[in-house]
Image (cartoon, rainbow over all chains, first blue to last red; front, side, top):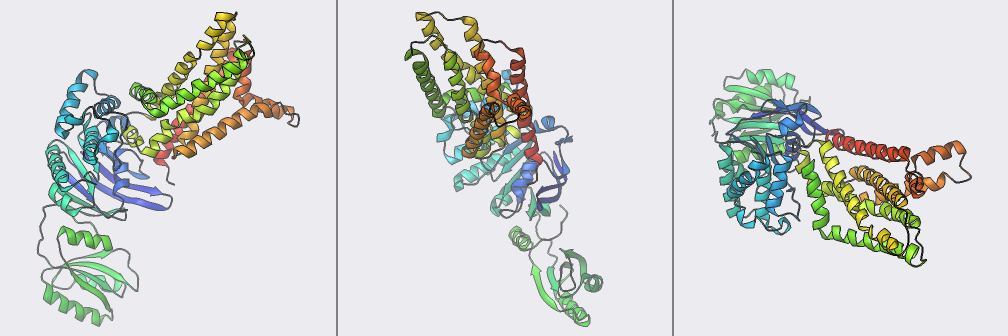
Length: 314
Length: 237
């Protein structure tokens, strides 16, 4: 199990990752979803111990990654976006090196490597120079190195980038198999991949976790709206909450006297819209935008990509 | 640490760059032996060792650059840093691999004293102290260059920076004897000059103080390289 507890990573004044908290258990595949530059790779760098968090802690099987890095890193397998290969080494030599740096006992090493090579289908290129491998084999070799030492936690950064559809399908099947014995966090900007492979979605935007929910979670059919109103939250928030068809109102971002953005969950749509127009008209608060929200992954992704929304429960 | 050591050492002898480095070193050392001994029919090997130390000073950045800066450039450092290895084990593994290359290359130059011994008389104690000085100074340059290149991300700029630092350290020896430098400053400069520490070894003086100085110098440089690696994980700029 891996737990991120309020992790923040700064580069100067820029916060690449902000107050990120979640945990992923063994048997679970979590998809870290977000646009390019959303902070996915930085988050994985912090979770893998490559970078230290500016704030917060990462725990792997209860072991603090900052305080006991060597112990915690034994439980992590990390496949970076750029596969860390040495072109002069063959896959077999490379995996032996990976086993050695992960302190696998020499007596167990060869059998362990054979298991990993069979699992990742690398046996036929075992003696070929890594520098001459195809993209697909390089990616598999990257995954194989992450599996060395039998870590419980797998962190995979864009693992199917550059794959053709057949390779992607095979790789996804492999990840599903691995999920039985591992806690997997897989970063991607491909919605279809995340929907196919993951049990859970962690959506990240501008470094913040904006959505944490089950991948298979369907729409609850409750109408939701995004409201942008030219008034302060102090003026509109409380009266909107008191409307009879409103179930929940959440403030998005910071409110100003000129603009407040709200996410509103209602029991039914039509009566709510009438009541809202009457209410805001009475408050002299012009509506700048009122848009119904869908609940598919693609809609959620597009929504958080254009704006930020508060966390939902898993 | 031993896994990193073995990988790096193999890398030096499995890549074209490694062989190119070996060819350049042997060609330059052969040229120096020819100019200092064969051409002048001299059995005095000390000028050869003195100039061999300059060759190592110039070649050391090329040997060392792949160890830290090269790993950062190819992003293979992610494999090492996210493994259970400590920064100490990573840096020492790499240092000892470069040190082993220095020893192997040094051993290859034994052919020159053997050639002289075949046709003339050599004093073994003198050759031994010269080799010891060459190796200790060479290790200090390796540690210094490992430290300097550890701060760089691009191999080309890392080589240039390490070469610049090596030349500066060498020039410090010349500065220490310059007439316009006050004697107090001269002594300080001489203290930090690697070349000045090497000179007694060329006079067959087995100086424990200078040997200790080289060892401490290397240890301090490696400690800075390790600290730099740790700091890079937490730095925020």
